[in-house]
Image 1: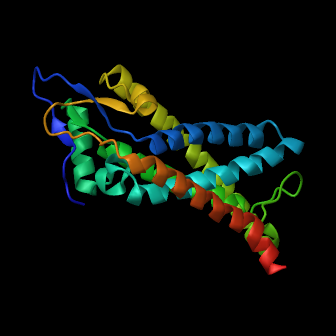
Image 2: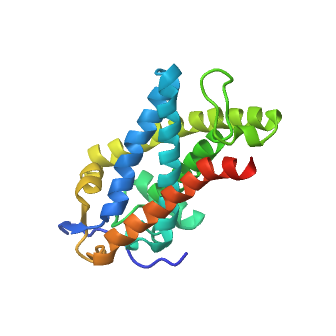
Length: 242
């Protein structure tokens, strides 16, 4: 992918300045996902029985969020787009080497490792939520599409659902450790930036996301369409196949 843009090595004495980087739809997606993943974990591991209905609802909402973020990766503002933060393996390894050696590279959006983690997280969540549609524990919960496939497929999807969860927990733990590292060691206020949308970036060569009036509307439309797609899948597909 072309290298346009947001990365720079801060010269000695260069003072970073606060600029708008993360648009509102991206920030809403991020924090809504935090709440929903935590809800899915608690309802799946501890609050079983009648509360499993909330597990299903949170799973549907996560699937809608993932579909939204995939779409937003193409139609969103600059730093939300995949072309801005997904980089070739060589560039990602180069960034990792610089990180280990102590070079201070500053990216307005996601750095190469952060961009890779975003992609992996989205893929894992897609597998996790998608497999849950076909999963069943034969006691408390059954996915809305489990009745459409053979029992062996249900069993396989249930196994995939559990495996994806374990991988997701590992990836989230790694993500939290990375955020703590950048906050404590690199002095980058990543959490605050994802709340306010503003990030401390270098003065030279790192452009901010402009205030695009249509971004909020496009984000809302993308989310509505994503939610409609999930609703059609979990409600409409079983009805159409009866």
